[in-house]
Length: 96
Image (cartoon, rainbow, N blue to C red; front, side, top):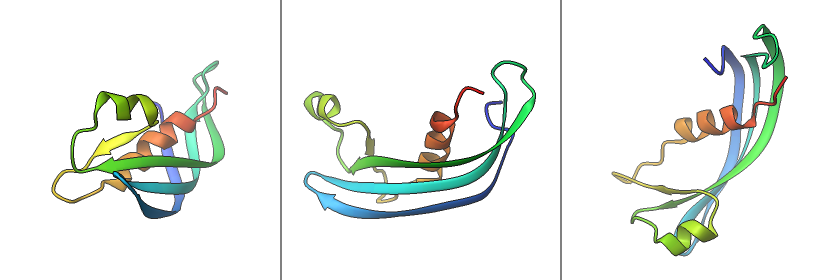
């Protein structure tokens, strides 16, 4: 409902170990179609944004959650970047 279409999605980034986390810094570019917040008519736009996430194999402490923007608990030694990109793409949509 929040995103009608996404094409030409390109993600680049790096992972690095920053004890106690593995941190990922990413840049996303995409052509998207989202409903206008005023008219609800489809609006085409090009999005380019950066996001950073921290990944941990153990549940973060409350202190770590208070200090860091995003901490994702990793299960089965797998990081799901598609979900991260989708979530951050939705968060980056402007009100148009």
